[in-house]
View 1 (cartoon, rainbow, N blue to C red):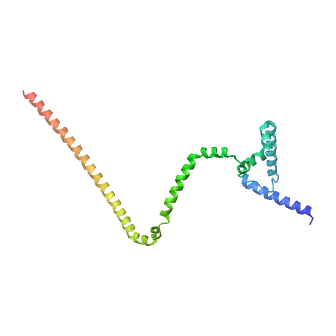
View 2 (view 1 turned 180 degrees about the vertical axis):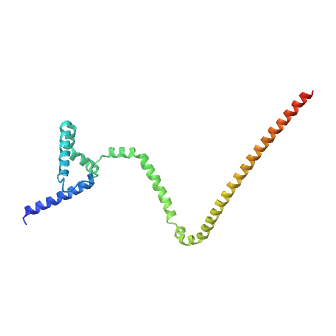
View 3 (view 1 turned 60 degrees about the horizontal axis):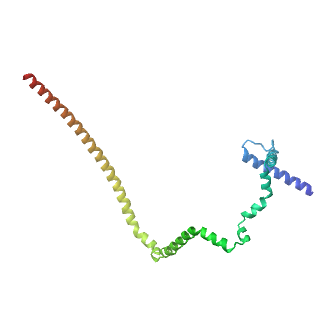
Length: 193
């Protein structure tokens, strides 16, 4: 096989793979045999749109020209290249004074808490955890008992409220009856007099 044939086969294979990828990305219904040039058309349309935007807006063409310089500014080693003088370094330190104080405070906390983490009592945790197992079981049992007692107290409070409500209604009924009897008795006295 000649190199031209290998290049052509590689190009066909690449185009088939790009079309398959395009089919997966843009739609589920695209057939690979029916529309082989669609990805290329999309790329050409994108390129035409970009060129049209460049012709309309001069800022975009200027941005393309300065893109390499912008990438240089965004690199992490750029600060090391420019070499800051002592005044700028001092200004940066003063500007970040609050952050440096906070960082210092956190570092002090870490050094004091390092002793807690490396303490010998933490090394005995497996021995103590076996002793905690019965206490945990007791706690779970007490939690279950508390739930049962809580539901019982709720039902007793509901019953109490129902009894008080019924008694209040009954007393109001009796009060109305007594009031009616008193009114009737007063009316009879007035009639007798």
